[in-house]
Length: 97
Image 1 (cartoon, rainbow, N blue to C red):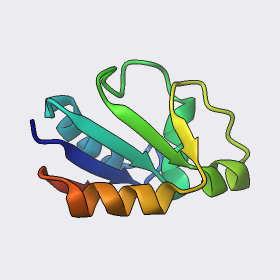
Image 2 (image 1 turned 45 degrees about the vertical axis):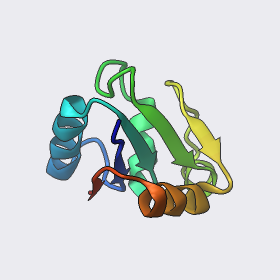
Image 3 (image 1 turned 180 degrees about the vertical axis):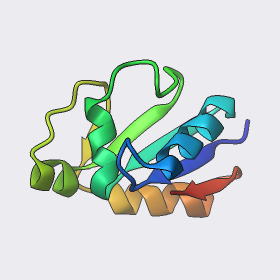
Image 4 (image 1 turned 180 degrees about the horizontal axis):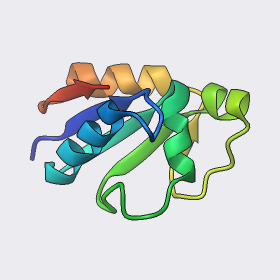
C-alpha cells in the first residue's frame, strides 16, 4: 500500500496547516513530519491528526521552541535523514506545507 508523506512547517493557525490536515485526513496511510513552527501541532487537541498517521517531530525544533508534546509523536534527532529516506524510497505522494 502506498504511503503519503507530509512535511508541515506552518503553525496551527495557518491556512496552509488547515489544508495539510484536510489532505492528511483523506490519506489511507501517511506519515506527518513536523518541523519549524509545525511542532506547535504537538500542543493541539487530539483529533486533528488521524490516529492511523505516524507523527515525527524534529528534536531540534521541539527543543528550540520549548514544546512539550501533548500528543503521541516520535521526536527524533535524525529527523531530516528519516524524512529524506521516506521521500526517496516511498511509493506515495509527498506534500509540503
